[in-house]
Image 1: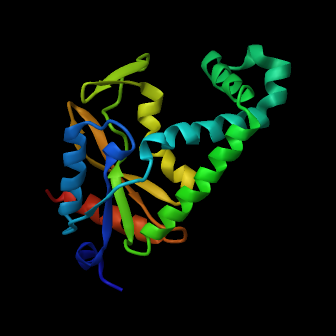
Image 2 (image 1 turned 180 degrees about the horizontal axis):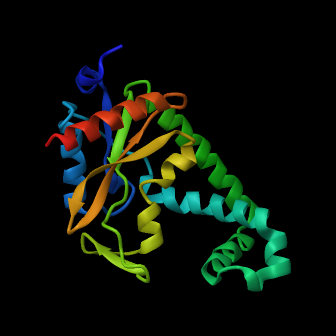
Length: 209
């Protein structure tokens, strides 16, 4: 196995084009790519088919399953649940069975696609979030001249890997406007050790910059 210093040059990394999943700040994209270059990796661009629909499909499954798990809590103690959480749970109550079934079909298709990526790449990478941290009470923000809902934006680049069931981690890759940003690394199931090795190498490079 390559040493940690040789690991970057030996890696095959696919770069998930973040705009395929949703609006992403240009400087965050650039910083994330630059971070990979520090360990000698030149990633190949990878697109996600129908990626713009992925968060909606993920949300359908999440809302349906969350409501199914908490249906008794909502019925017996709705007044004890945070108002925003309760609103999200009630969205799940309105989901139709066919919507959940169709979303699960798409999830299986997406999992097969992600699995096929790892026939070519050891890891795939992308920014962790598409923007710097918003204010606590902020509900809308502008990314690349596009107005987006804060929660959707913050989950847009991380939720796919919950969806596919593949391990992922975030490693710091600098600051933007005084706030930290991160690079996300995703591996096939069972390759968590590789994720930590690459993250460790990135952190060492940044420490010595």
